[in-house]
Image: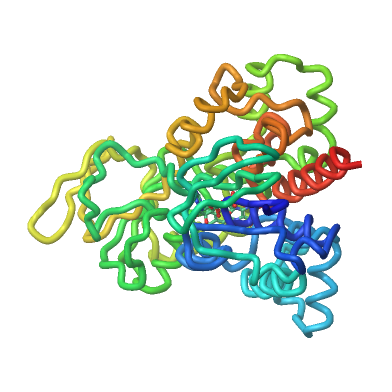
Length: 390
Ligand SMILES: Cc1cc2nc3c(=O)[nH]c(=O)nc-3n(C[C@H](O)[C@H](O)[C@H](O)COP(=O)(O)OP(=O)(O)OC[C@H]3O[C@@H](n4cnc5c(N)ncnc54)[C@H](O)[C@@H]3O)c2cc1C
């Protein structure tokens, strides 16, 4: 029987795995920990998306990464002669190549690669002494399980987007071939992903790219106010007892659909040079033309050969068949809005069943879904599990 099975080898699953392996190296040495993902390698979705949007630097500071020691990325950069160009701003946001190399180093150092298996989990149930996980590669028994399944399968598709997997109109999170996007292209969405994609395509096809945004560009350095990365949510939870109030706090504190000042400047520069067109109007419908799509906005109509939606996600646990069945069969407690009802800073949804990422919203708060939240969740899971066994 395994000690730990982590479902999802994205940033959240890998961060938890790294924290557990760091605290107890025998877990990986004795193959008591298994990390599974339906993708072929750990961090596949992260690598694909950051490459797809042409991301140069992370939005988060250099102390946010997989390793339990916050200074580890800086030490790694120094040891391997990464110069100052690999950091941006005063919080030293790392470049994407540096962050990727550091992730690979952590997975290697913690001996996690031999503990990874490509497998898709489709059923989870209790069994004597723990949990039984059914996957397309067989059944696993584990004393403890971590759900780190992310949000990528829940992308928010505009109602007008063709549902037939059209290669010329898709959401960034869908797996369509991306290397040869046709142009003229329109990118929809004014958040980090949309803006970075428009800038990246604009470099490839100057004056052939339109960015369609519903609201004026919103500028914030981080995706939630920096104080939420500290203990603010924990303190707040002591005062705000109801889940619905906590949901309001989380929604207000998240700065979804915002971009950094640096990106804002780049958009304005490309716009002034005439390389990028920015239309501030909601897209209402799209019709196929002979070669191009006809895009009907609130004010104007324009053409594009490719449409890329960076319209975020529409996450809800009940939309995942795996989670819906688990909630039902194990009668797991839910908040009024259908998320795991967790105590503040406890990631245990049931005995031996832990969550990270969006499922941890009510324990971690506004930062639950980003790298800072992954670190907080990993540290909590490791601490909570230790107390159970002492
Ligand atoms: C382009 C982009 C840039 C970002 N930049 C930053 C940043 O700079 N800083 C920051 O803090 N945050 C950033 N974020 C936000 C967040 O940190 C990332 O979205 C992060 O990848 C979320 O990690 P995750 O592990 O929750 O999800 P994912 O990366 O989606 O990983 C979940 C994994 O679970 C697997 N899975 C799901 N269901 C199953 C199943 N049933 N069986 C097996 N496997 C399963 C999936 O295949 C997937 O690989 C960024 C997000 C995006 C999209």
